[in-house]
Length: 393
Length: 156
Image (cartoon, rainbow over all chains, first blue to last red; front, side, top):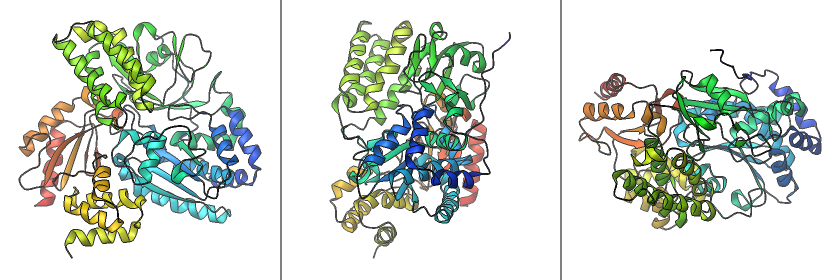
């Protein structure tokens, strides 16, 4: 069996000793030029939502405000994702360099790393790195200070506006959008909020220019991406791969030979069953052949010994607990889904009740206030539609 | 001044008294006492000049800001899908058996509490758990017994 190996990249974790020189050179360049590079590189947000990073920086730079902020979103909570922790452990200086350049462009003086409570053990290491970073900044004449803000165990705080509420000392309940953070973010000021991995990629672009980044990947999905691989695989771990691969290529490389389905993008992502491996690609929405799934990089592999009912039940339990409870479609919707699949399984409800639950997830998709409630439909529908018999028997 | 009053005052001193200091202050209380008592919440409210309902509302939102009394060592076993697939239940059973308490309970000597939590971000090294801020991965029931034994020795 000649397994096709996907091309492994080594950009993010490469140890760039010339870090200070790169930062110095980049800070010396005109703002417009850096933004132009960022946009032409095609870099999109690596947390999963995929907003163009260069545009986000540009929009914030254009806002006129006395105070602006840069936030690094390190509230990595999506089930199956663990790449950001590794970036912060190994190459946090790249993340900080990205924040520094963004600060220079936008005129922000303060930055924050919002670190999830589960990663508190990283604080001593990060504080050491911050000391080095602050001395580099003052050497280069950049007035920019970064602090760590700790989360306390709430998945929803990975949502950018909930994260800002949390930083302001409140419950992590998402805000209405618009206004977006680029206009009104932390403390009501223009704020750039980027995922850890996104910021680490900006360093690659500073160092090698936008071409090298753009040459990787396909069409609307440019560059490489870190994938967190777990589940039924002989080789769990973190891998940097080009965007645009099909799920089939991925399974050939990482599966255990008996892969039944792959969950792309964590509990809020999609379950891809075996029959769709070939036609499904990993990247952002674009004109790829077949279906293209965006992802924060969570790839959970299930082999044929796994019950998809148990998988769905586990996800729903997660969402029910992590829903902030602010909007009714998500709060009540998640509760009803948990009860509903259980009732069908026990035979307390007819199997047609599954269709009602599917309709409920449609309603949640259109009416929930934030990404959490809206994306419950992704995994629910992809599991129930593809493994209906497992939900019933 | 009671012990908790002193703690809250000290925390407010170092983090400031604005609303933005609320989370760091509550986290500071957890670090010391592992839970935030009603009395502590009243003190925080006084110190920041906000209502106690605001303090409780915020604290109760976050799963790591316990408002129920916990042991000195809070064990949080990850229950999300990959850990569930890789033997989380056996880990939980081993903990319950060693500590002679059930999930959600605290030992009578107030040393250990067993809780479940959502994804810890160690799926590639499942099953995983936290004891306070320390991470333990690729667990087996035998390892769990040994880890608890080590904590007990430390306490003796």
